[in-house]
Amino acid sequence: MRTLAVVSAGLSTPSSTRLLADRLTDATVAALGERGVAARPEVIELRDHARDLADHLVTGFPNAALRPVLDTVAGADGLIAVSPIFSASYSGLFKTFVDVLDRDALTGTPVLLGATAGTARHQLALDHAMRPLFAYLHATVVPTGVFAASEDWGSSAELAERITRAAGELADLVAARPAATVADPLADPTPFEALLRGA
Image (cartoon, rainbow, N blue to C red; front, side, top):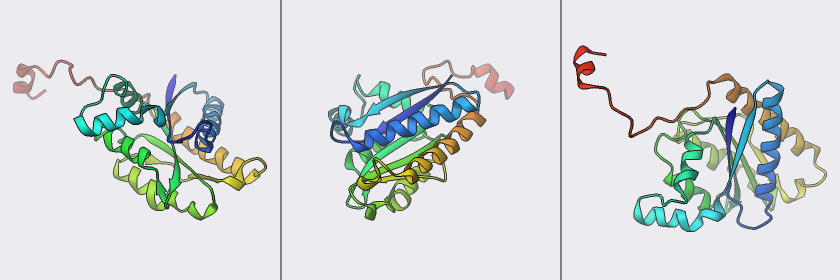
């Protein structure tokens, strides 16, 4: 069983950001199923953790509500990250979440990027804002990002095709790698005797 972390940075309920996240998730789970891989999505609504994120910025430590969220992302086999676009970039809430992730949390993790906005004028934000951010984090970002403007909802076959293509790319990456494991930072270190032997 593989785990998909799904991060939605929508600010309203309901939101087009969550709608896109759900469609990407459903398509990815289906694509993994076609490859013989079972997947369990874990959805994270960042708006529910806005205060927790602010606390983390001030204290430098995640509280009891935020720690499991960060662990879910760090331990996932794949990540679907969707943000609304404001002023040609991802939202402040989305960036705050990325800022508090552990430094190596996404190294090598397959990531599918999605974004929503009121008009198609913002579609380049996927490539000039979101993709460089995840490249900096050493994530493996799939080639196809999915942008949805308000006019794309309802009858856009093109949006459905992009979702299917991007989900297939993420499924290929997730299925091709071993299941993720998270190292226990409190596990017993290598014994001193083993270090002396060069083990």
